[in-house]
Length: 82
Image (cartoon, rainbow, N blue to C red; front, top):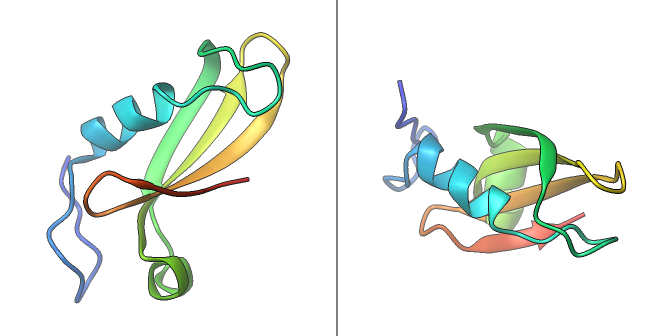
């Protein structure tokens, strides 16, 4: 299923849209947009409550091999990068 809202939360953007948003974010280290791996999954209840995150993305840069995390809210805005 491509549209998985957080229980009790707002209707969210689809997983495919969250993946496109994650891929469009530059690497925090080398500023490239080439990712070897992008994994998008629903947020945990704790992160949803604390930050409003609905989708959690894990990205591995294809250029410098940096691993970063990205939180995306229900509107498709990036709420944190780490």
